[in-house]
Image (cartoon, rainbow, N blue to C red; front, side, top):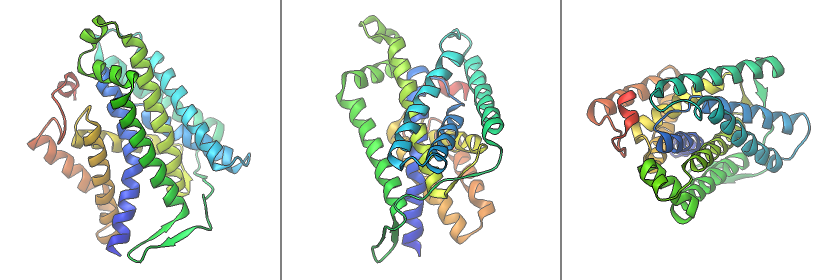
Length: 292
C-alpha cells in the first residue's frame, strides 16, 4: 500500500514539475512571474479533452495540439502582459498576467461551460503488476512523457546554442545582450517553452484524474508557486525536487491522514522554508525575491 502511494505521489509530482519548470524559465529570463501559466495549462487541457472526446482525435495528436496551444497562448501573454511594460514597473506585468489568466477562465466557461469535462482514458487495457505496486497504461504514459520532456529541457538548456543563450539571459541579460545575443528573441522563446510545458502538464493531469475543470488554472498556479518557493526561484533542479516532494506529501496525506489536510501541510512546509531559507532550497538571490 505504501509503495503504491509513493508511486502515485511520484506521478503527481511529475505533472507538477512541468508547470513549475515553465514558471522557473520565465523567472530566470525576466525575474517576473507569469500568473497566467496555470490557465494556459487549463486551456490546453480543455481543448485537448475536446479533441479526444468530441472529435475522436487519438491521444498523440491531441497531446501535440496541447503543446502548440500552450506555446501560442504563452506567447500571446508575453506580448499582452510583459513585452511592452517598462522595467521600472515589475508589478504591472505580474498583475496583468493575473488578469489575463482570469480572462482565459471566463472565455473557457463561456464557450465550453463551467462543468468538469471528462478526459478519455489512454491505453485502458494495459496494466502492469510489479508486485509492490501496479501501473496502469495511462500512468505509464504520464510518467514517461513527463520524464522525457524534463530530460529534453535539461539537454536543450545545457547542450544547444539557444539553451546557452537562455542561461546567459538568466544570469545577466544586459551583458548577454552586449555580447550580441538577441535578448528579446530569447525571452520570447522562453515564454513559448514555458507554455509548451504547461500545455503538456495540463493534459497529462487531466488524464491522471480523468476530468478537467475550467477552474483548475488557479490551483495549478498556486501549486507551481509553492514548488518554486520551496525549490528556489530560477532553479530547474529545485523545481524538480520540490515538485516530486509536494506530490508525495499530498498523496500520503490524503491516503493516511485526511484530504482536508492535503494543502495545509504543504503551506506549512512553504512557511518553514521561507523562514529558514527564503531563497529556496536550491535558489539564488535574484531581484524577484525581494518582490515576492
